[in-house]
Length: 186
Image 1 (cartoon, rainbow, N blue to C red):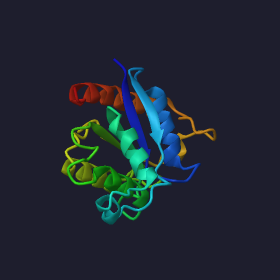
Image 2: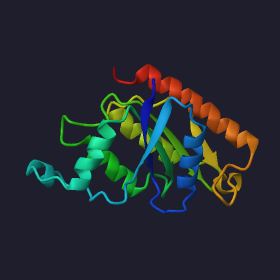
Image 3: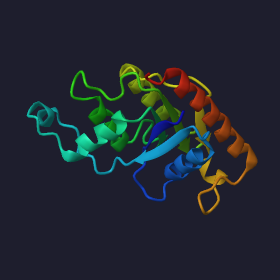
Image 4: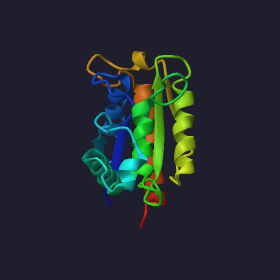
């Protein structure tokens, strides 16, 4: 049975390495996982007053509906200052509110981080994991995916340029499919 995966990309930049990796991962996921890329750049900053007044921005409502209809979530993020980008954290916050109506509750997820540096966005990866655990989203425990030195594994057109990296992404994708199947809401 096909499962819908919402893909959230932590970088807003059109030609970001993170965006290229998100598309590369989507291309090697098993066919039972269908990806929908959900943009974060147009989400206004979360402000509880708007929910309390019953006037959430249309972008929040659409985001919540899209994520609410997904079977799982794949986070693909760079690391900014040893943490996650503000746009990604804002998206997580928008989805977690209003209180008691979190779209994340029970929805399986996985995290991929990348960095041109050696540690592959380890800090960002674990900050997303920490946040999602607090929101009761079962986060895939392994294999973990940190892509260090990420710029050298992509061709100019954004495709993965070597078999070893493609194999790692494929292995991760197969594990994610099993994670989603085992943890998806019934």
